[in-house]
Length: 94
Image (tube, rainbow, N blue to C red; front, side, top):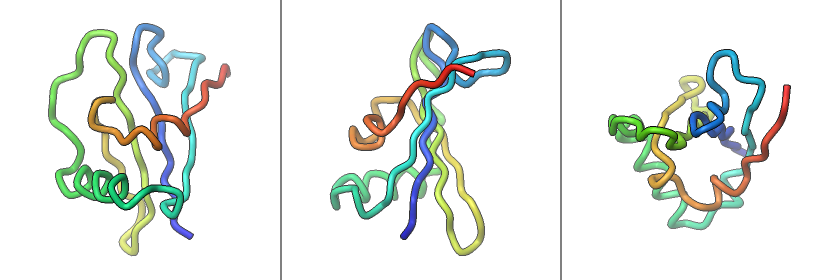
């Protein structure tokens, strides 16, 4: 079963950035996504994420999936990420 790892970075608290003690991460099986969400995720990977400049205090998501060639990782702003992926993320204090 293929899974995706999801990490929320940035924001006012600087989640996941160097020196931060706050991490927001989650994991989800691809089979748990709707067909529309899987298509949106595939589109993000096809486009290699989003080159859109980050918004001040805005969240970005780093998503990693395993492929036959090895892991692939992209980053995209929050508004490009399907809600099912956003909802799997939980905050952790290091």
